[in-house]
Image 1: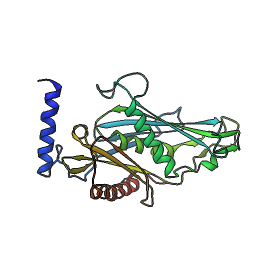
Image 2: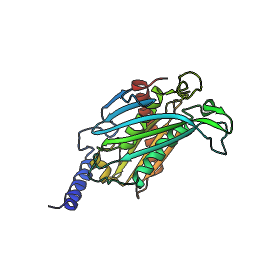
Image 3: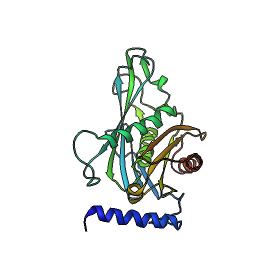
Image 4: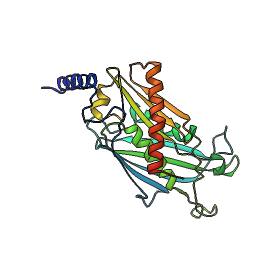
Length: 259
């Protein structure tokens, strides 16, 4: 039986489960998988975190060094985010330059940090127009088991929370923590046969019509959203996802992260 036929059978099975109000792994529609997190694992990084979200495993590292500001923000620090999907993590990933999926994931992680104002970038200016602190966030996926988006975003903010600006190394004063102002949390849901399920497994992602990621800040305000896939969502579905995402984000924030 080839992989295409297996995929069709699996999708039909998931659709039928959804119609009965069930999921493949027995979770409720709004129930997320177990989260495990460790920080401070990479000695050469200014901050790091390893996150397990169900079967998905990622590691995130933060490097900080002086650099030149962007011309339109001469008095603000710079954030650059990258994400690697390597063949080690899934047979569906290929080696070589980042592909569309990795670029999209990196941009959403970056947007969540940037648009939430998680870091006070004005405090990263060393000399206006000439020198600022540059923050490089690198996320590596170790095992792809569904919902890389939320695992990557959680790993990135956890690594940032542990990071210190290496002032002594570059002759720019003392080592000090990053000026963190907020903790954005990403929560992702998918639509399968008209049913909305949160924190999708790999099988659910493959069967989904579309995906919606909602990033909220500590006040519950939306700081980023991303829809993927060709399917559409109704207004009621979007409102439901936003409401549940804000609630889940607060639970995750209180359990794993604090400023």
